[in-house]
Image 1 (tube, rainbow, N blue to C red):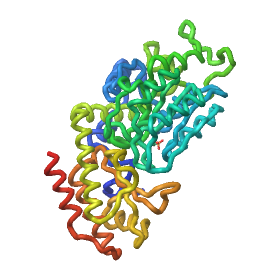
Image 2 (tube, rainbow, N blue to C red; image 1 turned 30 degrees about the vertical axis):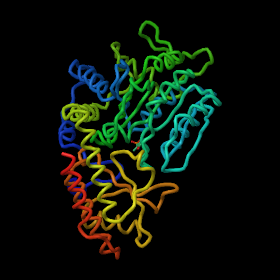
Image 3 (tube, rainbow, N blue to C red; image 1 turned 90 degrees about the vertical axis):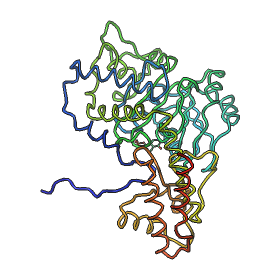
Image 4 (spheres, helix red, strand yellow; image 1 turned 45 degrees about the horizontal axis):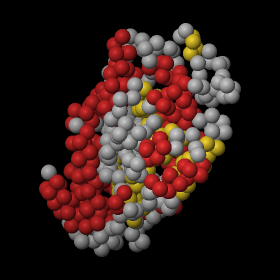
Amino acid sequence: MQPLSLPPRLLMGPGPINCYPRVLSAMSTQLVGQYDPTMTDYMNDVMALYRQVFNTQNEQTFLIDGTSRAGIEAAIVSILEPGDKVLVPIFGRFGHLLAEIAERADAEVHTIEIPWGDVFKPEQIEDAIKKVQPKLLAIVQGDTSTTMLQPLEELGAICRAHDVLFYTDATASIAGNPFETDKWQIDAVSVGLQKCLGGPSGSAPISLSERFVHSVRQRHHVEAGIRDAHHKDANGQRIRSNYFDLSMIMDYWGEERLNHHTEAATMLFGARECAVALLTEGQDAVLKRHQLAGDAMLAGIQAMGLTPFGDLDHKMANVVGVNIPDSVDGEAIRKELLTTFNIEIGTSFGPLKGKVWRIGTMGYNARQDAVLHTLQSLETVLRRGGCKLPLGEAVDTAMSIYRNGD
Ligand SMILES: *Cc1c(COP(=O)(O)O)cnc(C)c1O
């Protein structure tokens, strides 16, 4: 039997990305029992750290064990009862995922859509809220499928004015773009580690406002510390998932520590280290590092003579879509980058399939050397593929962005 052996890839796609080395180290830590006071202290510590990551005072801030969509699913199946109305504005692939998960919860799903590469104006969302009168607005902040960052600042006030709960999936955007749970009046947010937080996928940090918690709790009752899992609310609709039942998961993370699942301790150590890495470097410094890497990558791509995809005023800092030149086979270029240079960039889905590459500069890889290696290698592969390019311009331009940005 061979030992585990993987190539030393530089992951410059839309996620996953290479982990911070300190996160990998933290994940090789030996376990203690799940109710060992050391472990429960670390669970409390993780809650406090992620309150800082999310910029919130929300008591209910913890981890869902599973990839990012575990967080999405926990929020949606726990809040929506069959027949509840939800509004999902869709501007990319992950909007469709939110709608699909809500459909599976038998909610009444209303969607509005715009072309990929655009974002919604607050008025468009408010008009739809007035028409639909949903219980929940569910919207993605940064959709890696289109690279767009939906402004959320004004949506919280709109939701409060119409008595709507406000959920967002900030998996792709958190730690690379500003995110303010409390200031923006967001009721529920979930993320994953494998984008700008610099960890592996497998843990989904989540934060819930008191309003949201109250609404979830109405569906379940816990009396004298004994869970009656068969208890149903007035409509007889209990949460249709055990694993993603936020009411039970909150009791597990809460003071009573009611048994639910076995905490995925190794993922918790990783998630904790992602938060520590972010907060030690400082949120502002990390945002600036992502902005600089994203600006340098964008400028380098443009200097090479390639054109970026979508509305640049609303691009996420941490990923750029690149229109694939007509003269090349996009998949052949990606393959050559991977096999010859050990660099992975992303392909695209749906309407952008075969038309756009996606290049990420996230977490550990939001670094000057990673940006420069990627630009230089892409230039070389394109040149050898027959493209006429202004040689050396991409790296020179990216370096000058770094020089001016420091
Ligand atoms: C990358 C991404 C995810 C990832 O979900 P997983 O379950 O971790 O694969 C979810 N939402 C958005 C917006 C993303 O960009």
